[in-house]
Image (cartoon, rainbow, N blue to C red; front, top):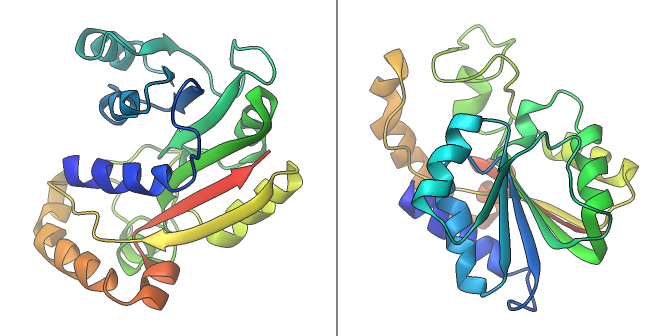
Length: 217
């Protein structure tokens, strides 16, 4: 995961002009390993997750971050509070993207940045093995509400919530360390193919393993 977080951090950095004295929130932060990297911006960093257990661990590991247990569809923060809102691989857990995006729009300042990353529906691996109506679907290691996203679904939801400057593109070379169950057999092959996808920009943009989304309020 370390290499993946490094790559995601680089993508995020492209969209943040002022990297100091801003408020940043990481939604779906888990135990805070990616959130802690945001401290290099020398800003006020917040991390939220629905899991009390994860937040307890995050607070212990990264005491300089403001962690709290939150429902990201109904955050406790005031309107127009954050300069940057990050969805850390969490939007693909929502069948309807509008409620979390509406809440992100509410807490973002005018012209603030929304950044997210999610599994790509049209990546061959996710299309075959993680799409629920695929005959090859494998449920090990995923939650019941988890489904890869398409560019079209993300863009439509962003537009419906009045975000502007919407940009959605694929990235690859995001290696897996391990996966549960019988999918573990595919890890070396997946990592090789994911690396190869990263070489050709057009291919990477369309069927890369993850979709990066950037927009402004």
